[in-house]
Image 1 (cartoon, each protein chain N blue to C red):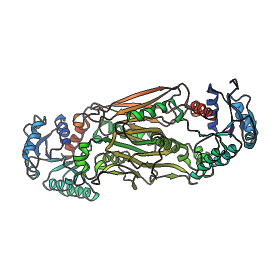
Image 2: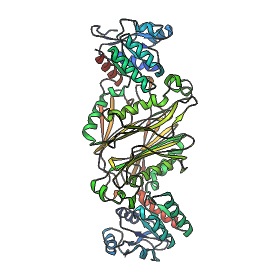
Image 3: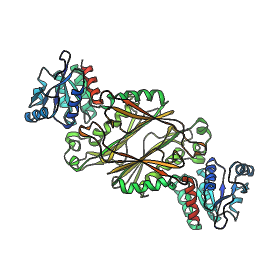
Image 4: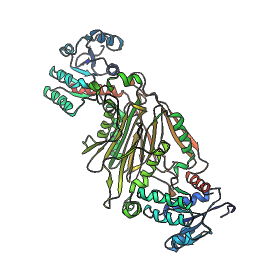
Length: 320
Length: 320
């Protein structure tokens, strides 16, 4: 609350999900004029407890209903860490109240829901952004440039994102419940893989998408593992796997005719202050195929701001 | 030819393909009693030129037909670097002549062809082995042990093998011609990915196999890119991609509930004398998900013999 208040973007948070804590920290780490000024929960005590337990929220207003927060004229934009099943309703209400929206992923459970969200924000003239942090990383910008300059003709994206969900998660987490985050691992993890697949292809939509055999669902029908392939008419393809049932991976490989870009922590960087990626050239094997001549160069990108801070600063700029 | 001749295994080579040079080198590097004693080509001069140009073949007999080599009583076993389309015919003839067989991959273009090959060798009482080198690597043995002890319950295998084939290869190489190596990249590269998928699963056959959308073929119908998923009834899966149209990759990741094994040169090791692989544990993210806590350990395996030397020594032992 010590930030200069002239052109500040005041954020209200709808819901007290865990991921909101990381975002509150991001907003307070930013040197830009973004401030969290209000937190709403269906139980006011929960909002109050959230404000107390998160550094950087001193002075924020606690609301006992989402509607009350949306009625607060001091709130410029809302952050929605609610389960995906509630997004369409609350993005529409936030847009109708004239608030810009930063919405957690997956933004909706269906294409129709996503289109409703976008339309509502367009009609209300408010900014909409999803909460995908890694695209706001300085490393990501450098990698996008490397994809254009070092890989030749783009051919392939291969990605995987997984973690071993503990019993409690599989039983109680919203991401395992059909009425809340009904897309399961596809919405929670595959979201990032599809984003990476599109990002590497300059957001050109694929011509076809195929789910792989072997998808796994829990008893309620929610995806616990799934793979898929996206294809483009000129032979480009992207395949990915996302899973709640195996040791962690967050691997991304982008390959062209002349080179390969690869990293092992594309969603959440291993360290906050520096990000690594590797480039490999198109050389292959030595005489008689007895050794590899492909060269790998390691790249380290300093990150002056965390990617989630970058996300909030980009969002605040768009709102301005 | 300086090796002791008591229990020596005498090898005859049918055909002078490039890959045979690597294998001649492997046999001569071996300290075991294996010797290449004969080389056959449909043109005797070609066999003579091959003998002259390959160190370690001095004294070997040149034959102008495959039949003539098979009739040589001094030949104990034959090596078949012929195109896959010729394998069934020549493995059957070699087996009928009482020769053990080491056959290049893919061993056949169809399941029926492969079954014919196995049956012919069984009936003749001769040894059959395919030319997959990496399974004879000391690193592979260590990794198999790590998979059993460090990964928990096995869940996933993801692999990719590709190289950017030059124009001349796409036009003239046997691997691009339907009547020769008609499986294209699937037989040449996907062979290793399916082997890795089965190897990691202790060679338990999958219950289903699905080709991914987006396979690419040349004008003759030969595969230039394809991906596939193998699934097992208990939720295990293996997916792979193999391609002739992109910068090289030879990536293998084996994941279980408690850990991940990963390497970037699973088919042909980067160096001949040492092989690397990585193990990652099942830890994931730090407090607030702002950094990664998963630990990676790098493993280096000394390789006293090249994997292709290991292959020949294993083959010679099986023949004995």
